[in-house]
Image (tube, rainbow, N blue to C red; front, side):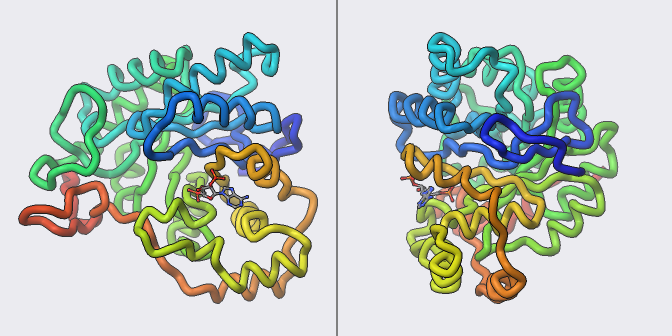
Length: 331
Ligand code: A2P
């Protein structure tokens, strides 16, 4: 899995082992933000295209597929892009859609939202299955609505999406090594990507080693510690260790975090709706951390923010859900 070139903004790209499509730029713009303000997302994506982003990450859950699609259509009208082919677009199958017979119709709905013929990468958002529900995704969910996930059936339907050319590559998100074992055991097309929470304060060493051995490329969400999802502040942007390195290198804390992730061979999915910060987040490729920086970062205390239990309402009988215990049908 080597870097194979650069885009106009000199963002290194990675060739996905089991993808049919173009290489993936190793920094993408995240669009998870709540509440979703259509114009704000659309304008931020347009600004991102202007400053050089060519990789965009969305999901059925986020409600940002439509504004992303509108922004791309507008960028094409304005001549900021020559063709949609210049972009790498990822979306994700939501948990109420992880039923073998719902995968293809769900991707078709996503493509309609995006006004696109195909996505470059389609991911199973979580190794979780909820009872099917029409309309917009619900969040949080009732634990009682969790049902066994038919990994083999869902993955075969994902493979069919790729075979039909509607998803150029397919992969997973929030999968542990145990979940990946189950997919790899039955896959004709192995997952190209596993997108997980990953940053200097949640380094995922075991999962990275596992994925490297099996040719699954790792992408990082919440590369800057997330948007205070758990109300405990930000272990990355508030890190004194990273601040000290940033001062010494003449960079921002965000750039140090993104640079460290890049040096691990991991793709960063970083959300910003601010033009200056978007620009800053691409300026990480013409300098390096030192061995001493890397050593200091390796000692940062580890803290995970996003848990599968967060998908579920904390009210009622079930107050926590262990992702490893969520129902997965054994082969
Ligand atoms: P904003 O959109 O106002 O720039 P995540 O880790 O999920 O990607 O979240 C990133 C959070 O950090 C967002 O709330 C984003 O807010 C903020 N952010 C993004 N880029 C930078 C940056 N370069 N410096 C500081 N904060 C940033």
